[in-house]
Length: 100
Image (tube, rainbow, N blue to C red):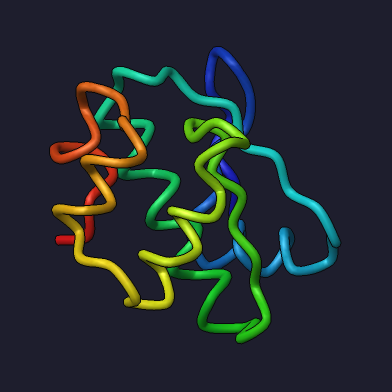
C-alpha cells in the first residue's frame, strides 16, 4: 500500500519496480552531489535488472566524446585506472558511481 507524503506518494521498492517494468524508457532525475539519490537509483536499477537482462543504462555524466573509453572499460578492455585517466569523471565518481 502506498504512503501519502507531502511531496507525493511513496511506494515500497518491489511495487515501484513492478510499476516501472511497464515502461520502455525510465528517466530518474537526481542531485549530482547526493549520495541518497545515487543509492536510490542503484536500488531501482538492481530491481529492474532482476526482471530484464536486456536493461540499458545511460550515463549522462560522461561526455559523448568519451563513449569509446566507457565502452572499452565496460568490456574490460582497459583498467579502471586507465578509464578514469581518459574519461575525466566528476569529482564524486569514486564515492558515488564506482562499482563497490
